[in-house]
Length: 573
Image (cartoon, rainbow, N blue to C red; front, side):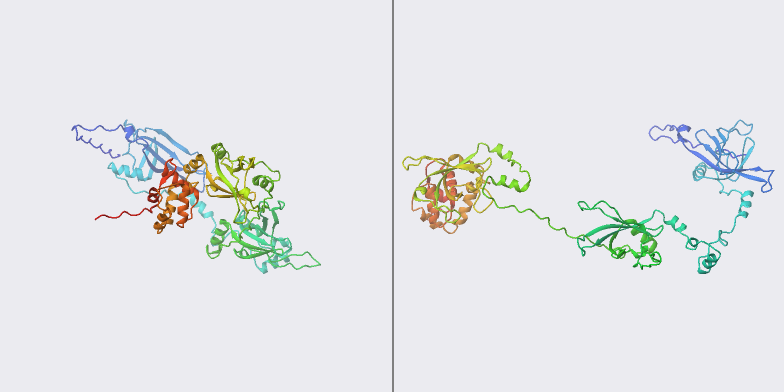
């Protein structure tokens, strides 16, 4: 009789209440847990001289959630036996006792009977062994399946292919070829068998990157190519790499797939010219050359499959046998069209459009600058003087030097206009002296901008030199508000510059003011010039406007204190 199942463990009392803990239902505790045994039964065979019985291998499954049993027989190919589900899953009764098979009724090394069919259990899986041992059920060691008579008979029919290989390998020597040829064998059967090589290396292609430098010939150039070596039949194919804007028709195949001779062909006038020596994979090395019908191709790189194939099959070193070869040459600089000098007709930007495009287009203005400074005009008083630099070709007369002009600078598009006010005493009618337009600096393609204009600046407009000596109040205020763009109107920069220049000349600066109590911008400029300081009128006007605060004059002592040249006070005893 089968051993009785081990009793269930007693519930553990709870530490909080002292009451026994509730146990999980069986269908939850053993959900998806199945025990498995390997078993067999013997079936008699009466009408065969080879075997008298057959071993039927089965697998017994027991589902722990309800202790139902399922017996299945794995399918064997060409067995001629209907296999698969041997016994459907259900609870199997134990004889006529009214009980059912449980986990303690099936044991390794013993026989179990289901509905009159006896199964001998030979082994179980690791989970089944661990589960049964945790429940206190002893499990015997696993046993092998018994040998089948049919398998022993089939083993006797097998040939010893190790000692006597079949079919025997054909001889491939000179004597075998001579005998075959003497017996009338075709010539194509006397060469080595290429089928095995084709089946082993089909679709395996070595890929090399190479260049052909033909610049020594007339109209020659350096062109890239891709060389394919087919391992299946040792043929070579050369493809041309189409470069963008290369100027060549798209003919990708430079050399069709064929065996490539590795030496110069010798012409035979009585027969077809052939070669008995061809390029192999050992002739293709990175850094070497290969001759393609008189053309020398330099191999500089290969793809990853090619390198791996050489390493695995030929024992190449991944570093030494595959050096890094750089064939790229620095590109020649692209020639730029030289812009011809400005001829003086029209605007500079308009004339430049003729050199940029075949059909000139209007110059696009700077709309941001145009919308921001549409109504912003800087006005300066100017007079015509003699140019000491020699850039002006016009020499003004005494009457020209007495004339007054108003120079207007428009910030919207950096144009300049010159107007001459009328003067009856000097018999000057006045009017527009220069139309509003862009004015270029002498001997330069740059145009005058607002930052080039300040009190004391000199502008050469169409061979006439103008000196700006004064500006209106709006112009001074605008330039002071935009100090970074107009450094001569930035008080901090002006004071810092003058203090650095006056360092060590304090006494000369105080003496230059001549003991006066009041001064203006022009007097300040004369005093600093007398002290040996180069200063423009715009800087003096900026400092004066800061210290005067709208008055016509400023104290000399205030100016000296601001510039750091004030006389030190004497200490009293």
